[in-house]
Length: 401
Ligand code: ADP
Ligand code: ASP
Ligand code: MG
Image 1 (tube, helix red, strand yellow):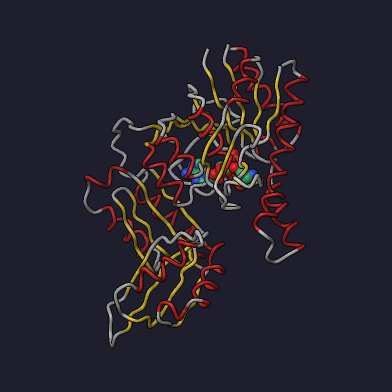
Image 2: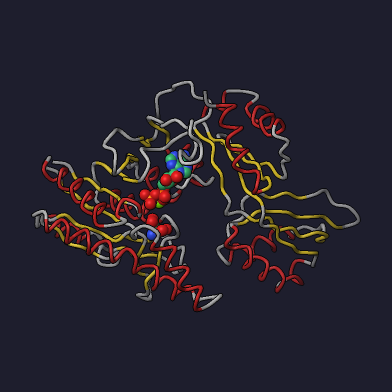
């Protein structure tokens, strides 16, 4: 008997038919003698719809109230799925994130899991029940509801798998696994048999939404072997693990991220401590800075350009404008019609010319590169947003045969 955590995303539970489909997948695992903890997302586009509802009321809703609202989506699913399981004669119980013991930090709408108290889940498992847990949600120390950021149910599932020492964590979704590019956009994308945690982490961070990047981070930390697979087609998916066979694939994937904005501060003083002040201000507000460019100083001034998530751009601008005097001023502006396109693969560490091949593919499409950043296993470029799909297709063609 194994303990399996199975996570089902929004499309997989979008209506009655899909809920029963999921209930049957769980029932099969039970029939095979396994214990199951199911983690579920809100149905279909529920989370987006709730965000739209909030926008009807307020342009700047309180983050605390946003989490109060968004957490309701997952609660609908846990109840419906548990009812379906019970209809099929499977003993099951639903638990909210807080009933399941998720304690998070205070950061509303992008909280991090601090602790997971699994007693309740374990006692329900001991009663031979399937435990259906609401993903994406927890409780902070003030006992307020928090959510883990978009795609956060993946993180809930991996955290539970780690805390319960589960034998497997299966992420059921609406595609058959992790592909070399978004299979909905690139028809020639190939399904990967496996991928390393490091590669998956880079892909997820670069916009491949099939897994949330924090879930991969956690899986790596606690060595939880993940499988990404389809809830519709029962075929083998993609295994995410520490090491994979060397298959000679130079690039594992191409990803696009449009949640990007570039902030420019032109003419900041060219003095020690300036970057510390600028990025310190953003760090205090939990705003992640990604690519940073700095011009060489001239006449005691320099230019600073960096990228932040687009949904944080307005906040970044506000905090920088309000604290201009602290870092010595400059002309601050934000550009939002950009996208980040990245290639990821551990193979590039031992091969020269990968960056050149990527830039060549872009040059052939006459696409201008605005910023470049690299890590050992990733190369990212910032380009005009409207050219991003073309860029992904061209780069994918250049690397994946
Ligand atoms: P869920 O609701 O199950 O969490 P998501 O919508 O969050 O599903 O993630 C699955 C989607 O991720 C797929 O439908 C696909 O369009 C997209 N995607 C983007 N990049 C990739 C990739 N490299 N491999 C597989 N899917 C990808
Ligand atoms: N429902 C949340 C979202 O849409 C969490 C998730 O699906 O993982 O982002
Ligand atoms: Mg998701």
